[in-house]
Image 1 (spheres, rainbow, N blue to C red):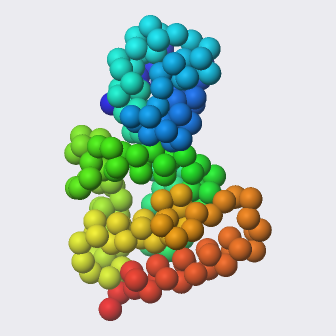
Image 2 (cartoon, rainbow, N blue to C red; image 1 turned 120 degrees about the vertical axis):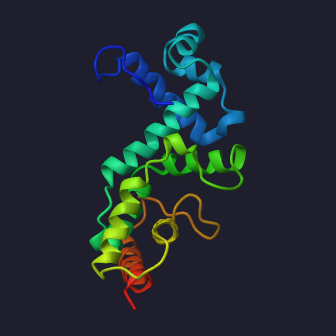
Length: 196
């Protein structure tokens, strides 16, 4: 479900406030643990307005989650000729917005234990897969299923993200530590995707 603005492509300030507050609520507490009462109180609105805009708590989560996927695509567009650089840019985005990764984690835990994370109608990876296939055809990327390659690069970029079962990085850590990780990530992805 995508949030449709009431006037053109602009989202009203109240809608934006609800989305911002709800993003933090869902990221912290998950879908089941999020409370509409906390969201409307912090967003200075009421349940009637929230339900009028989004239909339900589930509808609000859907709007936020699909919006977060679109944000990552816009902020970190794929460059299939430089998948290692793309992985590093994803790493940096996870540092800036750990809440977006937490939303995906809650979706996996509470909604879709297997298969794709979103319905086919909400998948946004067609252009990425086409770009990887084009890079493969040009001999720049190893052969194989473009989806599997994309999944591997994304997983590597998340090695220090909030979903890591080893260590979750923070933007408060020393810059040189992030540079070490970026270098390791870049080199590792280059080796994985290198053509044979």
